[in-house]
Image (tube, rainbow, N blue to C red):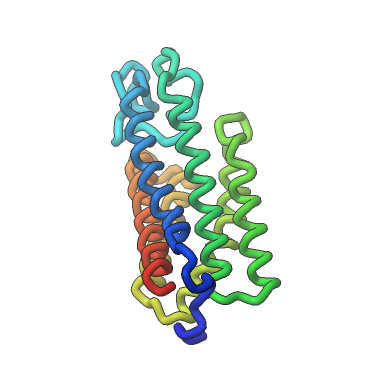
Length: 213
């Protein structure tokens, strides 16, 4: 695949819509910080602690109606809004990448359908089906992301490809810690590093799309 085939828009058409994933990443980070600031307190390390601990709390704690210290979680709806923004961000990213990276119609359908399924189950994240939702969303998200990796590699964007592989490694470390419970105390920090790394990668790829188109 040559970079000369990398085209989608019509002449004179605004391409600012390509920056939706970048804007979504920035808004998600902002809402994450606001939700964390509103979280009353409590973590697995100390249920009586005050406020959100970046070392001990998880993202899922922000989605709960009650904080772990038993108080009402004022940041819950901000976190839900952040999750909705994240879903829109990822879906728009996969729509853009599936089209701009010149996949076949079948491959494009697989990427978009997998991406849609990975986001469709997220509203049930704070229920008792938490682990099942995480596994299902992760599987379909991996399928969609693998397609994007292939397209990026074919375009010879090797640095972005390697950062993507790093993200996969971080996700693997998350899963290993979670299921093996080895070094479990590190999981909240590793989760946040993975979140940030993935969002930065999506933003960098999105900027690349914008510049190339």
